[in-house]
Length: 240
Image (tube, rainbow, N blue to C red; front, top):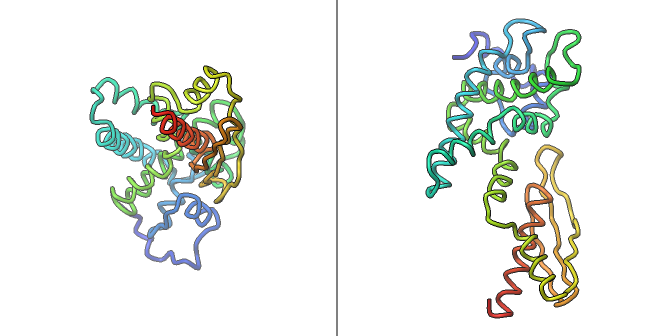
């Protein structure tokens, strides 16, 4: 499944675009030509990434289906299918590509870097091709780890959207019902590089005097977790 000349590629010969890709996705290729193929659009040269894209699409669907099956034991087949569709569609893959800043790494022919639908399609397809390349290079376990790493912010968001009502909304309603000041959210720290950041947020109440800190892979997730901690304190102090 790997190119015949893969063994001649050592660390000293690692192309810059491959080195940057490996850093951004947290995976090192044993067979560098696979990475280059995944980053090559058909407008540029052969071999291009369409076959890897086809393979990566299948791997992506399987990994997400397995994750949902294990994490959502109470959901029926229809709900699981809708959740999977929300996680593997073009818009979701485009978000992943933008977070990785993938466009500068791609090998494209003249005129293929324009905006609009064509650019979105190229980026989404490249994400699938990279998943396919990692599957060929490291097998299913490596590909599964990569998919979960790339989609974790979306998995977190899906989990939040499935909740009956998010923590920030419940906290605001609890305070409003008692005519108390609304909470204040403050971003305390952002850690990590652009493609893999962690946000530390504080949720603070003036009355009653309470605060909590929490972190998450998005600022929204961190705020939700901090709000939940404050809500738990309020319910504990008031006896539920």
